[in-house]
Image: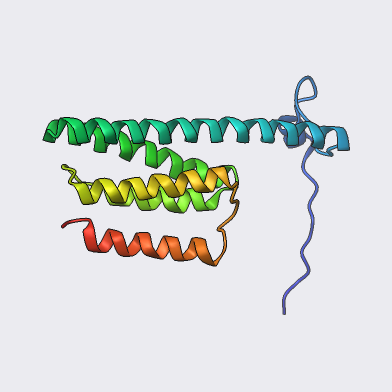
Amino acid sequence: MARRAQIIPPRPDLRRKAVNYSKGFDLKLTPAMVEKLEQVVHKARDNFTADIAARLVAMRAALREAAESETDEKDRGVLSAIYADSLEIKGAGGTIGFDLLTAIGKSLNDFVTGLETLDRRRVDIINLHIDALYVVLADNITGRGGPTEAAVLRAFSALHQKFRDG
């Protein structure tokens, strides 16, 4: 038979280590402290979204450059940049409550992983991912989204399987 959970108060020495009275927070948050923390989170969220938007602009510009130059070396550089940016978006999305950004960023990251050349079809697929990321940011779609977003993720998975190596 299961026993009831027992709450054990922290030892005084651990409490002193966890709480910095000179510039930290007490263990019991007042409404004013909660409001201050929420402001910090909202400001960080704005910084994250600005960073993601800048990465989307950079990816779009890199794709245009690659289309104009049409060299394998340029393709590898662009794919490397898109890989890095999509990895950052994948990691940041969940941090700020945009789980859909994480899912689409992962899809894009998985698609470009290991690619060395770009053709018109691959560029179109990458652009579709970037468009979807823009929509999530512009419409402020938090969480996993709804049925439409789930269908988009399934479509990206199908695109990945069909056109990744071909």
